[in-house]
Image (cartoon, rainbow, N blue to C red; front, side, top):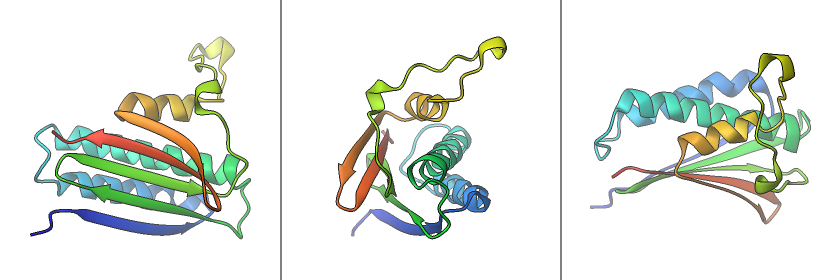
Length: 142
């Protein structure tokens, strides 16, 4: 019996769909029988990761162009959850982002979403792909 889940979601390049995508991540986490950890925490983490990644794709990569889409692929195996968020932007170097400053006197917004994503996922890679770029995020389930 195949024990793999794959979701493919195409979303218009609009922030109004962020909560919908976040809830998909939350609901998925609650259904993962193979995850032995805190499902509520995983659900919150997936909501944050998906909404941050989608926000970056919409605002930065796709330059808020309403004619573009964001494509999301979620793959769950027995041991790992993979989330890929595809964009059609110029791309950037994931390792070239400065660490965000959380001091309210010097609030720098650039890089906070990626910093949060990296802190919640086990691996995060951003690379070129056919027709654009992909942010690949992985979480070990066991």
